[in-house]
Length: 167
Image (cartoon, rainbow, N blue to C red; front, side, top):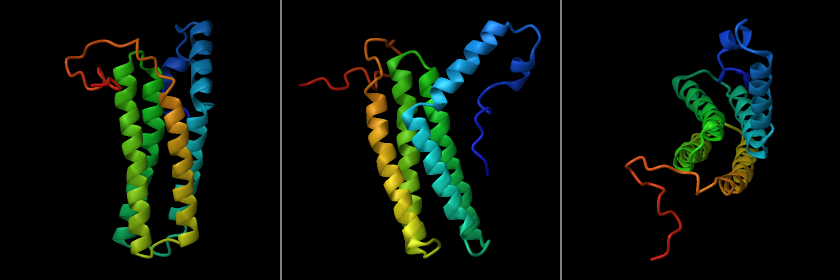
């Protein structure tokens, strides 16, 4: 499995003759900015560790294949959630995507625990994954602190409206 930088964008649009050169350049600059974020770089490192772990699975039984599928799904959710949050303008939408990223990272930790209990992966590799996710968590907290709370709109749910309000 490869970490694909381009599958969040419509390749037909990038090759469309009607799209202006400046618009294409702006899209490419934004894509580069997102993929150079410290959190995205760490997500790529988590992907590399997950990829290394699943390559060590000694057999292709149903359990190993299930773990492989679910772990790759969660790593993709890290990347896609970061991209979606960066693409959003309002605070609530950014936070909704950030929560999806957090859940995916926590799921990877749960899968790591399952792999450990079932002795499906080398404990040293699993420790590397735990360490990478801890570093990811720290960068995640830095990343969400950059979200502008003032730039929000009422969506009727008010999930993040009073975040941090003291009672």
